[in-house]
Length: 483
Image (cartoon, rainbow, N blue to C red; front, side):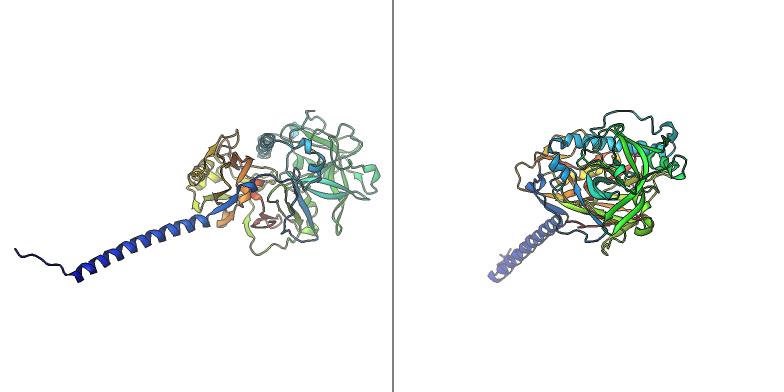
């Protein structure tokens, strides 16, 4: 058999071809790695760990809605708030905040059970509420300043989309008043104050707003009770409300609290932004057409806004249809259809979200999800955060991390999907509840059952402009509202 002689030219050609194939394979591998890295960066936030820590300096947002019918929003426990500066000793701990949040969620579930007919409003009346100290409520986190009376007196009030009636503490505090920063409102010093009569239709309308039947004591008496059995009782009255120098409302209906048990840590009371006809949006609908919006600040050391009327919302606002949770409920119902983590849409059956429905609430801190949905969210988040050491769970929050050895971390982006296919990205500031750098927790929690009402809480709403078009039955979202 003859010997095959391979020419040097052929051998060189083969080696060159082999090199080309290897180079192409390596190049394809590099391209795939680059594509994967690009996808990872596109669907993740890079967060400086130091930014997770609270600041003692107020840094107002550089982007706020510049409107005449707009109020500045601050976190009541942050350095931008007078309440914080005057009452630092009573700032709640993280454990207290989470405990208060659980109390609020339980009260929302109870209120919805009542509104669906599971409980009778007539079982409770405004003169027979339990006298239990409510110092741990702290319900609601964000405050604005408004004027009440003639001449007007400035009052710092918590605003709350989960409440309907607006109320403030009033002299002479016939029962008791908790300590507040502003002077307690004195009806006797206002020329425009008047009580509502007992037998009026206005008095009778209180039951739908408070869940408690009004009573009579020379004038109409309201009562409202919160999650931990704390309460406010007083005269239902009308007065001049001043939101801004050009936005003044005569005969505004509100509660003038004479017996108030330990609520709200320094705030003078509450502004109700719910859907009932006694809420502020309903009472000012002639001017504002049932439209208001807010942007919750990125942190407790920044600022946001609460605006009324034509919000001047940009074209980037995406609207969804408001739903009705129950016929007698004043909560703002929303239809959640899905969640994504790091660009990955979670495999959650649509029936999981429809089983209990959901609301949006400015006073709930931690978003509550059906257990099935939360399990999918937590699992995928852990998978994409596997490079970071986990930290011990708390009672409410079970997906926590220890970032003490890191200067920055890459965190997968989270988006919520609503009816109509609307996607709302959660800001980086809306993903975690930070107890310490060694315990940074995913700011979502599970309900007890899939049939419990879901709640889109205020942590996830940070920096979003949220537009409530109540008259139009719409809710809008835009990113970067107060960054």
